[in-house]
Image (cartoon, rainbow, N blue to C red; front, side, top):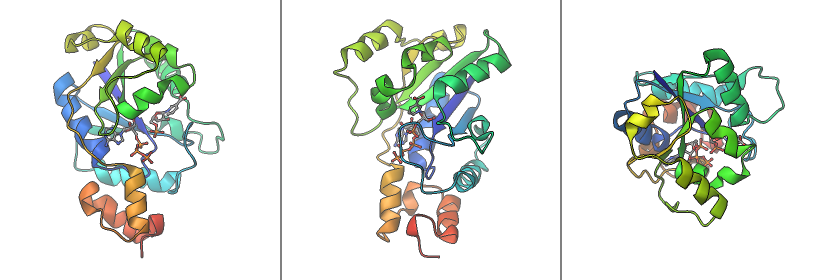
Amino acid sequence: MLTALLGGTFDPIHYGHLRPAISLASEVGLKQINLLPNHIPPHKPQPEASTEQRLAMIKLAIEDLPLFALDVRELLPKASTRPSYTIETLRAWRQENGDSEGLAFIMGQDSLLSLPTWHKWKTLLNYCHLLICRRPGYAEHTDNIELKQWIDEHQTQNVQDLHDLPQGHIFFAHTPLEDISATEIRQNINNQACCENLLPPKVWHYIQQQGLYNAKK
Ligand SMILES: Nc1ncnc2c1ncn2[C@@H]1O[C@H](COP(=O)(O)OP(=O)(O)OP(=O)(O)O)[C@@H](O)[C@H]1O
Ligand SMILES: O=C(O)c1ccc[n+]([C@@H]2O[C@H](COP(=O)([O-])O)[C@@H](O)[C@H]2O)c1
């Protein structure tokens, strides 16, 4: 079985996470997608919502969507002050599950383009496949020669490769373009602008009820 992780800060979770992931699951044949919230984002300021609030929003977003599950390994131990480096999470997953199980890490095109700034980025493919979702505003090609060569070496267009090998391939999915970001949602709420169509209703109600991102209680 191919296990899929979708890592993120989810501050808050929105349809830009969920809709491409649903499409990706049917394109690749994923039975489940495990949302993997980080505790301390490696390359971002601390989230506005607490770890508990981000987790609560994810749970609300997926409670009626059986495709999704939660992987809380980056939140444990909560007291950790260390950034949630993906390579360390993947290593821990491999230690628990062995070398022959298939593992895929899902990311948007923006994350792929930022990959050369990630901790030990070139070793990620020793542990997992990378499944890339399209994202509006982020080019499909990169000017970074090192990244481009690395992609060319590992890219596959054959979904079956992702099931036949436990790790090592990069796959560009034909997911729908969703012009949504958590930044835009936080700004909209701060400006008292509407964003109900950008995220699940239960998450929107939670944000209002908690007064998150300066929403009026
Ligand atoms: N609209 C989107 N389309 C495709 N992928 C997305 C989209 N939004 C987020 N992702 C991907 O989901 C993962 C987690 O994203 P994250 O939780 O940081 O959301 P974000 O909207 O990018 O947040 P922020 O605006 O705060 O930077 C990343 O790999 C990101 O590329
Ligand atoms: O390992 C790294 O160096 C690294 C750098 C940036 C992001 N990540 C991970 O990539 C995922 C998406 O990150 P973000 O910042 O877009 O929420 C999330 O799981 C992060 O922990 C990981």
